[in-house]
Image (cartoon, rainbow, N blue to C red; front, side, top):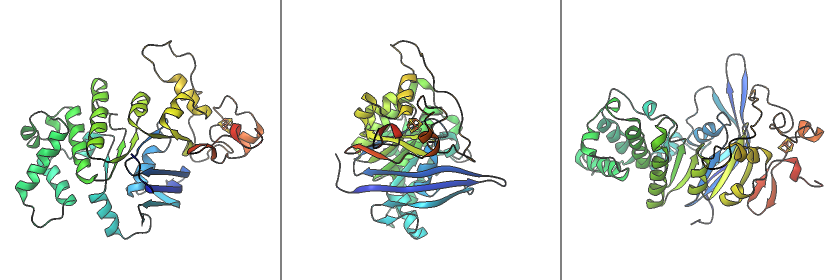
Amino acid sequence: MQGAGPLLSVKNLYVKYKSYWYTYHVLDDVSINVKLGEKVGLIGESGAGKTTLLKSILRVLPTQGKITGGEIFYKDVDLLRCSKQRLLEIRRKNVGMIFQDPLAALNPVFTVKDQMLEVLRYANERADMNKSDLINMALDLLRDTLIPDPERVLNSYPFQLSGGMRQRIVIAMALASARELLLADEPTTNIDVTIQAQILKLIGDLVEKKGLSMILVSHALGLVRKMTDRVYVMYGGNIAEEAPTSKLFNEPLHPYMQLLLKTAPKLVESPLTEGIKSIPIDYRNPPTGCVFHPRCPYGDQEVCRKVKPPPIEVEKGRFVRCHLYGSGS
Ligand code: SF4
């Protein structure tokens, strides 16, 4: 179900990280959008810039990170120029984020109740709400995440709970603020592999039930395929390809996406035959031309080494940054 205009629109975003000696060009001209009710996937290797993109949207980059160009609009609110108050309001009431590491997202010295009530107070500035209303809201959120025995969990400390339980609490806390948009940043990275699919399914079901839009960052390509309407493929701080999910997985255009699919682990097919040449990007001095050219099977052309490919609309709603699809190719 998709509405008319974008709920979120990121245009030509540039982000740099600065250390004492170096500047790292982490996002380079990134544009994405999310429509009302839409589920969008963001895929690519670790270090491609996916987390930086999500943190830029909420303006929670670490202090070394600087947005140096572009714009981010949430509906008609310019998130890079609005007042701090307006930004806080959007974080409180509209957009929630599930961070990668549930243990880091929870404070070990406070009970789950203390932490959930704090989030709920923050998300519900209503004078008529008392503590027992907030506790009931916290229990409802925990029930939504199918946590067994929510009363006991609410009075526990994070270290007394399993990784899966902690991640469910983090999801419940994100849902307290995510009344329109949920940003889920590799929500299963640090939990047991046996329950990763379960947690992702839970997130998908809750997003559906609450009518939320979502950006899902995940390495689990099969689940991204099932859970999203459209996908952005990131490589080296760039969007390499953007396409409706089924088209991307059935007919990937960008050489990086083609390799990613070839090398994705499959349980029932032949073993891996081919890998992607492993050359980590030096963000202090990214490759000239196409950022993927040192690893691309077609990257020895002069144009690939010298000219950064622009986004090319190969069909309505489908973009690829690759010279193979440029004019005259
Ligand atoms: Fe490969 Fe060239 Fe396309 Fe980049 S532009 S992905 S190097 S073919």
